[in-house]
Length: 118
View 1: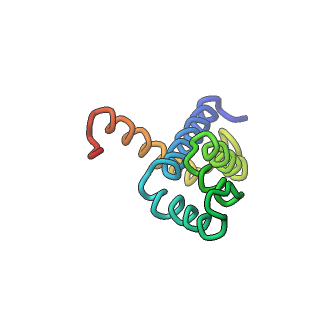
View 2 (view 1 turned 90 degrees about the vertical axis):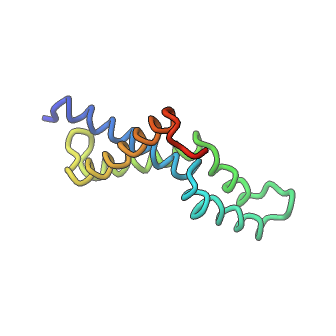
């Protein structure tokens, strides 16, 4: 039987992992450099200018935290399910999710404290 505290801990780690990865894609420079930018270039090469083709829709969707967050959340939840589910996740999954969650919390608090160059 799963211990209720471990189930809650795994679900909180899942939340933190999803928040961090979503921000990485939607708002961070790394997401712009390695995902959003290349997808925008790809869309501009194959969709007609001014046309809202499917590639352009994908490119625009990558800036939507609700859209991106849904798919990243689904992938993260699937990863938790595949490694055993809430309460039964292996330590390596918890460490990875915890590192991403800690990064999100630290960056969020840091930005509130004025620690960013923006």
